[in-house]
Length: 231
Image 1 (cartoon, rainbow, N blue to C red):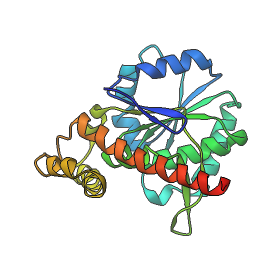
Image 2 (spheres, one colour; image 1 turned 90 degrees about the horizontal axis):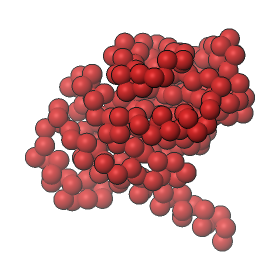
Image 3 (cartoon, rainbow, N blue to C red; image 1 turned 180 degrees about the vertical axis):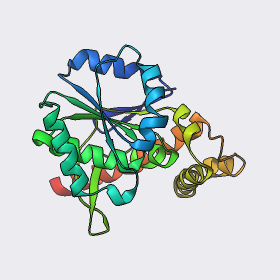
Image 4 (cartoon, rainbow, N blue to C red; image 1 turned 120 degrees about the horizontal axis):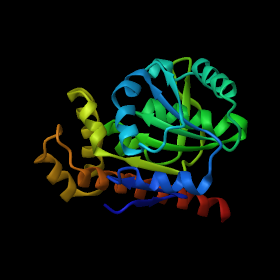
């Protein structure tokens, strides 16, 4: 399946993480860290290892799951962990998980030593069709969502359908609702096809279309904003 070109990086689909091997080889990172919550560490890291069986030298940084933990206190803990592991400006953080992980992991990476490279591997349907696009990172302050954050682009995003097999029906339905919204906003034929599909067995092609719609919206808004600033 063809990757989607977003602002400064590519979004890969059903690639088996093959392009990640090339990124690692080209950049020769000093250290590689995989950031995940405890659920993702248990369910998804074994899959991640199976894709990259030759990548043995990486450290796992775990956090508790849930939006309530996407705050500055947990970020401080992650920054300290990176320091303890001797992370320098030439290391890489791979954010493996849902939107909380990609939001918080991207924020941590974009601010640690004024910014280190990071890659997002969203593992929930909602994060694949929504949080995977746009370069927004952030954490919550006083129960206000994404109150503090940055715009920082990942080196790449990888979307693999196999991770969806770890999700509950509720999590799948949440992502499917976002896909329906994309169809209603931008593609009537896509919306009609979703009405006939099974939200528990979403195809990679459907996810690809949703990401393409989100990417079109994000890049169009960014272009208009840039044009306004320059005029």
